[in-house]
Image 1: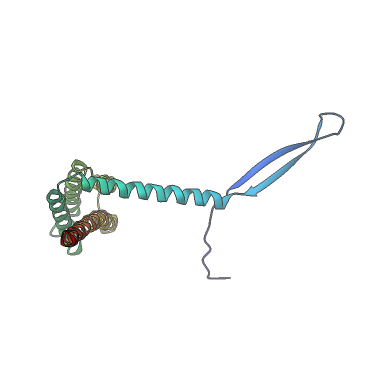
Image 2: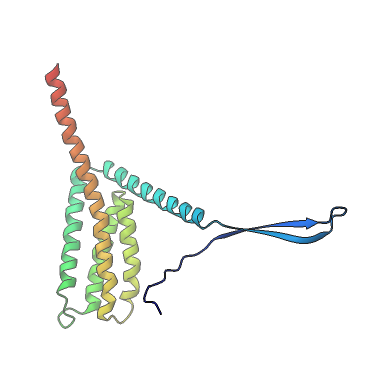
Length: 193
């Protein structure tokens, strides 16, 4: 008996059937079956698709940021970060005797819905998609009797939305860095003239 955990992977096989016939007539006497394991190719194809989706998502974020006034994006980032930090703080000190779970879920839903709307209005698709996915987790919770363990996906959802917003912040910081470097490059070019 071993304590080593076994991990299960799917195996993908390609079957090819070739009939074997008699020399003189076309009667099939047997069937030759070739089986090739194509699992590696399938996994690589899936990995490539995933990488393409991430690249498209990041490009959409970049374009969304560039299409908006930097002050509006900064205001959105500040507000969304504050709302999510407040939500996290509320979840950490939650006492169901003081604030019922249903009330907490409704408040989180309103916060996430507002962030989704703002992100969608600014064409920040990945953030609005993350918020939409989080709403999909919250909707069933709003319709049932909630226990403390039901709040685990809520905390996870808040963290996921924070990550999506942090990606936007990194993009804006990087763009600001480029803008600062181009100003320095312009000053150097002006001094050379």
